[in-house]
Image (cartoon, rainbow, N blue to C red):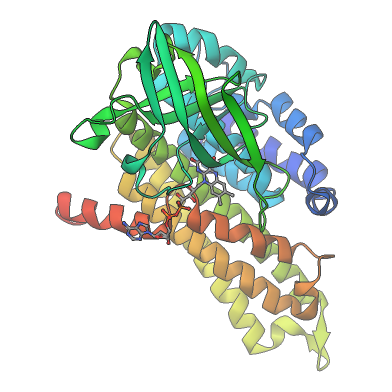
Length: 384
Ligand SMILES: Cc1cc2nc3c(=O)[nH]c(=O)nc-3n(C[C@H](O)[C@H](O)[C@H](O)COP(=O)(O)OP(=O)(O)OC[C@H]3O[C@@H](n4cnc5c(N)ncnc54)[C@H](O)[C@@H]3O)c2cc1C
């Protein structure tokens, strides 16, 4: 936390206390019940978590990206779903701050800062999420607005979000394809159906849904920034935030898995001594701690690069790639350390093992991250 201001350190400490006192004692029961964590989300609103990316005059306490990453990791240490509930929201807030018209900012940002309005982003389609430019959701000009037809899938928080940043084509014939893409700021209404809540391995509590647009009407001023054809570039910038956020979530899950394993290895005994004293278990702990520390550094590096204003798609991709793969390994090793208890739903480690894979797939799969990294390495002539 050395690079943070005193106020930012307080923000992180407040969220840490919230997680230890109010989240960790209840998370197992809530998670297995699969119910939406209304009370915890309410507390996050009170703590100002949904306003962390909203500056004045619309919000009060925006924090730097390194602070935001630490807050995200803290929430995920308690329950990854809580960090997920503010991830897309923050990306949309940043999109509005960076690209929104003044009218769009005044309309949405004050209520987003308090969490009264929560936002999500809808990119992925049933036909595929990696090749976004192949999307088939179309918004056609019709009179003084747009008519939207198409479908999106896996859209997190979409039932409870009042604002959906919809990536769609306003000019399906455009060449190159990305010039025909826009972000529409969409609200629930006639022609938009949340058709299904998707069953999931983990990431319980918050909903991930299919959305169907069938003759949905959006006003002309729903286009982010007021100009068509800029949506792909806008969303790629937003995904820098999203990927740092997902990387930080992975760090939080890995931290929780490591903490539980370290504690358990000191109280569980076999052959007359604590199991950590068996070299195989000690080695697991040493490797877990080493990769967790490396993941933390990469996430902070990407966050600092973001904060500097420099392009950071490669750094965010590296952080997301490394931290998510590390979290998966650490979650599995935490199960090994717990032996049979690691497979029990009465312990938390099985949840970390179910939550960790999402960070490998979400916000652009790790295969896509490697592609981004390789392209940037060539474009930039290697590493700095
Ligand atoms: C729980 C959950 C929540 C989600 N929340 C959201 C959300 O809120 N909003 C949203 O828009 N999306 C969301 N997603 C969707 C997620 O971003 C996509 O699943 C992801 O981008 C991958 O898209 P896909 O599933 O269509 O896989 P595909 O694109 O079909 O990819 C399948 C496989 O092929 C590989 N692949 C594809 N193209 C290439 C390539 N060029 N090079 C190498 N490998 C390639 C992929 O890496 C993957 O291994 C969520 C997903 C999950 C599971």
